[in-house]
Image 1 (cartoon, rainbow, N blue to C red):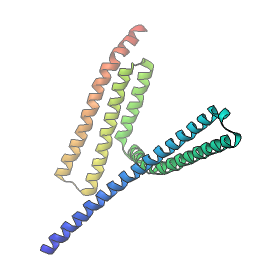
Image 2 (tube, rainbow, N blue to C red; image 1 turned 135 degrees about the horizontal axis):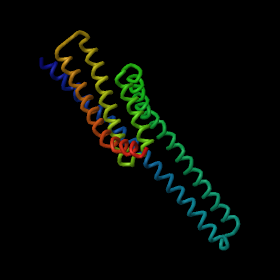
Image 3 (tube, rainbow, N blue to C red; image 1 turned 135 degrees about the vertical axis):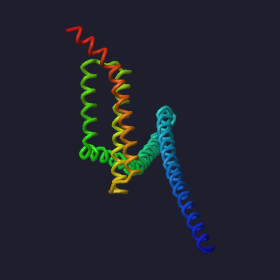
Image 4 (cartoon, rainbow, N blue to C red; image 1 turned 180 degrees about the horizontal axis):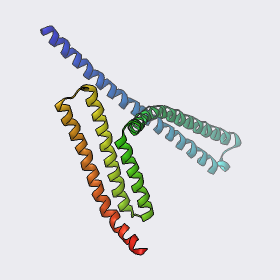
Length: 215
């Protein structure tokens, strides 16, 4: 028993140290990237300053000295540009890895769009509301309220669908607790949709009435 406790404590310690090591590696990469950018900018400033000074003091320098200063400034400028390019490539490779998160999120949205009829209904309603807002010429504040409501309803439906799939995977058969969880998630979607309908009535109903009177 004592050996098992010691092994568990050692494992948790190693996991914690591994997490700290990853955090330290992330901060080290960020510090190195910042350092490279700063060094390249300094080299670029030195090269530009050297070229400007050489141009102003050209009359006081002979041809050989002026060419040497210009060559050194050009070399420093090329080195700084190369360092910036290498840093940008290194950073872009890490950014490319971060972009996969957006790919997975978009795949989740398209999966829900293909498999969930209620999500498709909400998307069609959002498209209809958008067209009505365009023809009725909503103000920027009204557009903001409409977009927030659409995002709120679609997010609630996505979470409801994900929770329903998770419950079906955990308990394929009928279970009262699983039924309660699904009902609560569906109730959240109902509240979001009802609130959005109320907001839509406040925004669109006066404009529709004024449009009918103008005919």
